Structure formats: structure tokens, C-alpha cells
Length: 402
Image (cartoon, rainbow, N blue to C red; front, side, top):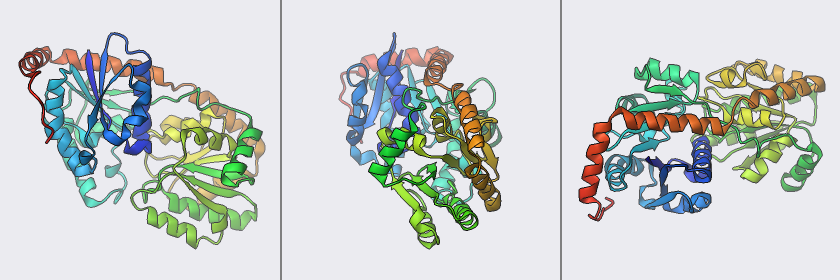
């Protein structure tokens, strides 16, 4: 099969969707098998796919189409023509915000979450309208939909009305080479050198997004934790600023313990695993997640996790994390105090988390995704045959990107 993958929603590699796209692409590049993969990549992000240059075909997309509205128009108007030009058997869109209306070939879309239905004001009103109304209509045009958790699959059935064989749950994986237990003394030494950190710490890995990621309540819980324990623990927030980040930075400034709260910005792949290993406790207080990859990454590094019981977090973490209601600051603070005071409990949760993380790997994700491509391509053979005949007649015609 000739399989296309749109990558223009990865935001320079700073998002969870980016890790999903990179993980699939690395697997396709290492073993394409009998398939040919064509990746559509924004020009400035081509270096991020250097690992794939020799085995996958990279099609540059003008930076003109990076802004969200223009990017949506590119997907709706230009990508269908590219699909025909490159004679694709299947096109995979890894985000519900970019699903196609037209059907130039069998379509596969990944829906990571339907957070706009769960978190009021998660985005500005335009994004909320698109996520709640337009995406619902677009979903019905897809041949196959991948849901990354049972939670997301249930949301699709509830809010989009998609049920049956066309929605398949395919869990994300974990890179167990990159995220694995390692010497904590080395991790702590590197943290001290690069970030000036020598005290025990809570770590939260998520882009600085308000209100969905719930940083402000975490900061409030940390304030209460510090006031009650008088300890030297710190709070590390690892992630780039995004929608509503000003509220989070304001909460940090207003904290009586602001000197013990550090915003690290976007953390490189090299540093992320070290941060997990060096942290005493990893927290994930999000109001809603369709999966929660940082929870499993931390567990794969052997670290104890405290996390919200909302969305897919309980599904992904199982019984290997200490849970709390993310809207109850005292409950969150209570779990912070409980684990900070009990090293044996931290070790117990770290061991349980390591076992839980082993249930998830990217090779399984890739294999199931390839099966879905095959189902999509075979679901409408007449469409595929018609597309190939059309492409044969027009392949020499130059394509103008509008």
C-alpha cells in the first residue's frame, strides 16, 4: 500500500500528538515492509524527520500553511489533490481537528481525546466550536477512526455517534529504550548541573495550558503541602507555554513559595528521561486526558505517580498510581504529603508502575495501526480503483498549492 501521513499538527515536536507521529514514523522508517509511506511535513519541521529521509518519502508543505485556519484549509483543499497525485491507498490524519471532508482515498483518523466536551473554556470559542460541531461532522466522513483509549472510544460514541467496527481502540505505546529505570544518582547529578536542582521534587510534564492541565490547582496544593510540612521539596513544571499560560505564571508569582517552583520550559528528549528518574514523585493533575503518556513514561522509569482520576488516566495507570479528584485541592495535597512522607510507599508504587508500563509498547500500536490501514483500503475497493485511474491520467499535471 501507499500510505500518506499528515504531520502538520506536531507544533515543532512539542505536543503529545507529535510523540505519537514520531513513534509511528520511526517504526515505519525502520521497517516499511511492503508498504510505501509518504509524509506531508511543514518545511521548518523537515529536520525533525531526518531519521526517515532514506526510507520514507517526505513531501514539504509551505510554512504559509502553518497557522491553524490556513492549515485547516490546506487539509480540505490542497491535501486531497496531493492524495491523488501521490496515488495514495490510505491517508492517515492523526488529529480530529484536521480530518478531511472530501474522500480522495480511504481515510483513517486518530482521535486522541474529546476534551472540548469535558473542560469548559479549554480553548478559545473558535476552537471549541470546531471541536464540538465541525469535527463531529468530519468524523462521519472517515472510513476508520483510531481511539487511543476506551475512554476516548466511549466519548466518540457519545458525542459523535460513531459506533461499530469503524472505531478501534489502539493504545499508545512507551519507548522502553528511552524511558527505563536508571541510576538515580546520575540523574540527580545531571539535574543539579543543568537545572540547579538538588532538593527532592514533584515533577509535572505537560504544556502550560489553562485550565485543562490544572496547573493552578497543583500550585495551590503545593502551597498547602509546603505550609504544613515546612519541607525543602520543590515543584518542577516541564512544558512550553500555550493557551492560558499567563494564569499559571501568575499563580507561580503569587505563591509564597515561588522560589521553590520552577518552570523549565520545553524539555528535550535527552533531558526528559533524566528528569523522570531524578524526581521523587511525578504528578499528573489534568482535568481530562484521552490517554496520559507522561504517566506511563514516568512509570517506565520506575518513578511513583500521583494522578487525577479523570478521563483516561485511571484507565492507563490502573492500580499503580495514587489517585485524587483533580478539583479537590486538599485531596491532591493529601496524596503529596502521603507519598513524600513514605519512602516505602514510593518504592511500592514505582515497582507497580514499572509493571504497568510494560503493558504498552509502540510496536503493538504500529501493528494494529497497519491492520486498520488495510481494513480502510479494502472497505472501498471501487474508490481506490477509480483514484488510481484518475491519478494515471493526471500524474504529469503539475500541482499548484493554493
